[in-house]
Length: 170
Image (cartoon, rainbow, N blue to C red):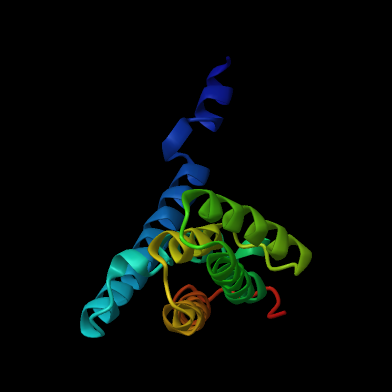
């Protein structure tokens, strides 16, 4: 490798590496803030953080905002569809380990069919069936959380990072 090539591809500290580092720091700060707000709300509302399924959604929406699963239709719709499938399986089959597995598989299918595929929503039916959660789970924390996360992502991307988000709402 020539000296010119070595200088051009100097590794992590080249311009591309510095841009990646800056993007990572900004995403990390945004994710930490969103998780902090989520945790604060869970304590404030006396709702256990363990059943609030949004940590991976936050990482996706803040860290990869251009990805199709990070758009509002997928974020809100995917969580609602997956949770609804979980609730239907729970009430049809009960809180069994096999039912939780079936619920996740059916939820992924339903998200594909409805064009709301949001991979982090796969945890929703698992939580619903495993923990025998009530129908109200679809409203709080799922719908409320998805809407709050959408609002946070909109503010974060538009006002803090000064970037367009979302690419499309529906």
